[in-house]
Length: 314
Image: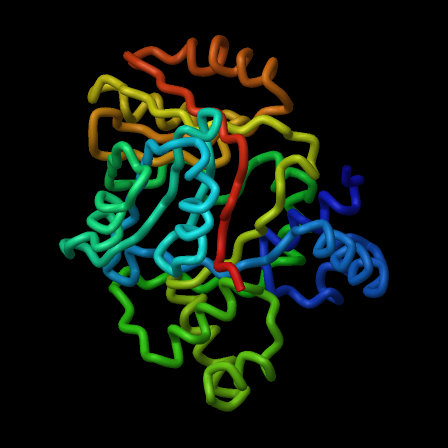
């Protein structure tokens, strides 16, 4: 379990994943050495700062894929999916009979991964839903981003740069840079320069350009169990079209929802819920989701194991 200082550090890293320890320490009124020590301890426990790209800025589309398979085949399939650069989240759910993953492909292009999955032995069925628009969680899961005051957030955050809306064309060195940051978002400039075959000044400039354009952001990948949340589930909601806006607004205020998105397909909202335990999940489904007008159907898939949460696997 973590303490208040750990939570404050996690929140600070969610605000600016590459903020110097000195800036974070000043905001938390702690020493640089203490902050660095806590970071190393959290890092040893599995926490990572990871670079995440905005698929819309790159002309890409995200897809939520559900795979039903034999339970004994699930771990190997999930591991193979997690090692792909075009997957962003992979989990084993429903007692090992289902895999859920988020994958991305160029908008309008044929989805090669889906075709490959449909021919994979031990897979019974594959369904894919295009993720149309984020509805909740874009600013971070509330349990992970509630430790700092507005004044502390302002001290951690660097200068604000409005993001451009036009798609960005990436170079070969950009792809190498983004992959390195997806593994470790706090990788130093000398290592990034070596990875991309460019100078440190070039890396600094390009990283700033990608970040300020909205193409690149930094997220904190941490096991919710470290924060005391041991139950996670993917919720597939069927909502009356006229109620989508009000249901989405309500989900955005629910602390149990780490992320939610509108989707195509037989269900039209997918939400990732994080609760203290199974009792907490039951309470949320009955009093949280159950209180929302317009929800016609709910399909709940408890996640038994995360294979990939964010970023890339080295």
